[in-house]
Image (cartoon, rainbow over all chains, first blue to last red; front, side, top):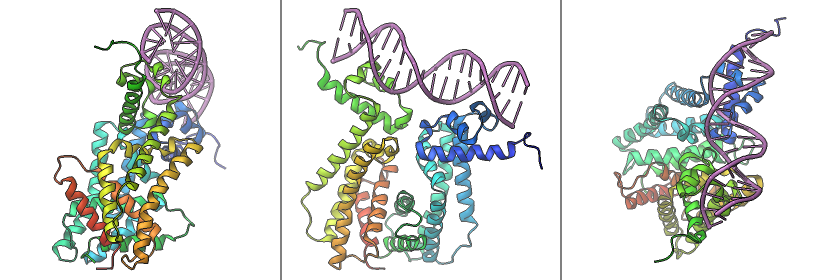
Length: 197
Length: 197
DNA sequence: GTCTATACAGGGATAGAC
DNA sequence: GTCTATCCCTGTATAGAC
């Protein structure tokens, strides 16, 4: 048996981050205290400062890690060759990824205003680089004559908002399965950038 | 000339609400203090309690007033007779109304979690009754054979999210005019519920 | 109606013992 | 690595003078 006391930085660090993520998502960054986070982890408030220089760094770290993992995960997908299939692939990926990480998603989209300018710019750049992936798909499809788009930038904003909104209402075990939800959104997305009905 | 001192409750009350709306939207409810609001208005913190019993009532009041005005304003529109035109009318109304009130919109969608259960239920009911207006349009269009919809409830969620997202990026005097934005969103919305291209 | 003054709880963060 | 203890600030809200 390993001894009960000793170094725990390799386990406590992730626990701190997990607790912060859950609490920030549930109550909002500003409404959560370091003491609450500490209580969730089972340590005293002062001990948190072994794992983060301050509260805001904890928030920024969660956001950065989430967005970097999101982008890396998308780029790891084998790209479908036709814009039509590629868009469908994006919809499935985006919804699936977001449904699985509601807390991280919520924080990354809602707590931006609690970052100081430098950190805000960094996180915002990550977010825009992800959005640019969708915009590229739309532009490719437009160039190939597959999509009918008056404005690819606006269309990418509209679609991202539509897709991300799924996290506001989707519940595991609800009326619609994940696969059904993904299919229905993909159908709407594809129709919205196609030729007028 | 009217005297400089005396009763100001008829003017200070609205100023308190306006300041709270601006600050809550900018920094988040939890991050804004009563002292900050008071400073914006030009009174002491204690004086705010002449206009609200507490901070949360101030928030709930802003939300309720916004949603009630939104719903009343939509119901005051002369309904277009065909589902197709009615949906287009909804898109124009929704975007126009939301672009004009970014602060109120932001608060009503983001600060729900800061309400206690009773107030949450009240505000949430208002929000759902507004969403039901869109869902009704979609169902009517489906029944009339104008729209092709696998699931009107999901489609209404998807469209509301898409439309409301415009407040995240639209800026007065930007690349696209209001009218252009409304048109482009209306086109996408109509295509998304139409027949597959 | 607004003010000053203040009560009292809780915030983030640090120091130093163990 | 975690603890207790604590600093100092800020939070909401109230009391009582004017």
